[in-house]
Length: 280
Length: 307
Image 1 (cartoon, rainbow over the protein chains, first blue to last red):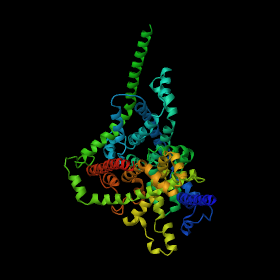
Image 2: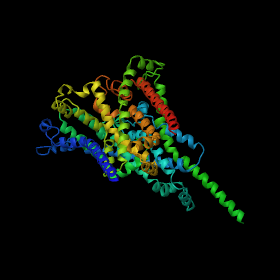
Image 3: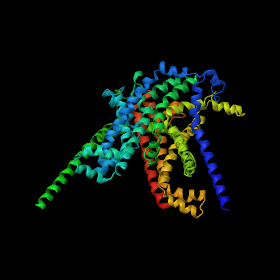
Image 4: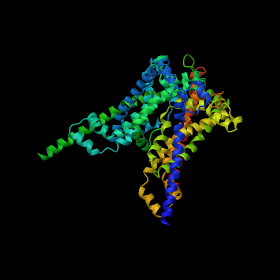
């Protein structure tokens, strides 16, 4: 009787494992598909897009992307924008979140709510006046303009995430720091930053990936060819090579690698952080 | 003597707290300035300009509700909203599949952490990249059509992105595939807050997999699932620009165009009808606010109903 039940349980778990495995394959297959086809000749691709490459691997698709289309230069542009965006988000976000989480002052709840209220306002709704104002201030076609737009777009989310995390930091630690003569900024640096590291590291990773992957803001705000981010350049490049899927796949795959690399390195803190459930 | 030191201490504490308050106000100042200048002001400007024929340069005459009247009466609004509603079909799919997968992962079979990490991979890849990838997979000579021809369904092998009626379902599939990992992670996060002893007690009472799922997991996940619905619906209305741009560009015609994409179209592609684009922005903003408010109300009701 009992062993029957445990056999049933084992079979049940085996079925669950197989279902999850099939699902995992369906999530990995498109990546695998891009990889195998990016290494084929055009003829090889049309012979069968599903087969493994049967000729010499065509690394030339990747070489062309790097030498002719200077994709590494584009990486540099994207990296500068993502880096500056994240630095501002963490700096301004941590300053404000410390105040919201740990200091009582008049109007605090109202200001906090006002900031959260802007959480759901999409960039599309603010882009036109932003664009016109930025144009007057020579911030169109400048990295600074894109970075400012990202600060405005993502600060509410950053503050929500950090404030809820900072609230959990033990007050006794702050009091001890204050008794030791730590001022406001030193308390932030010596107590809040180390204790609130889960939220901070999640914000760094999450918004780096988010800004790296974004198309809308840089496409509207950046004009000259040499300033474009990788996603903006990719979107015009891929459209011109619809007849050559292997070449397209090489470009798509290369552009996905930096964000994927960040994910592989920091997978654990992303998943743990996302389970706290506050960003999308 | 003692009273004097006490007095000094409390005086020091008073000034300390005042200093903290002053520092706190200073430290929210950058955020306040950024959000006022780059969020609050643009929204106010968008609302104001939606009543004008603004072209970004010379014209900006007050024309009342003409943009709105034009937008609604030309049938454009209905068309765009219909596309948004079709794409919203992905939300129930994502959440149901995400919930099932989360419940299966919760059984903690070997390798479940790796599976969880794999399901989240699409979220890491730009929708620009995924859009082009799916577009090429559904092209006339692409792999999907090759499979269809091989199994004798060649008559269904069409250029999927060339018609709204085939492109929108492909988009729904793509959005669902992209979003399942997010739903899984968030739902698992919600399940982690359910006390494990509740499960143990139910198991000892002989509750099987299904009754555990429906009698324990679902009722305790009401607020998590509400959160998933709100975020996904709002995201469908506002977060699909990259995907639509790479898959169809909103075309053919306006067959796959959404409200948020039309703002871009009207102001940066086909001329500079900034006034009209602002009116569409206001409509989109109202829709998003309405959804958020409605779902918060529903979630309160649901919390009460489920106890």
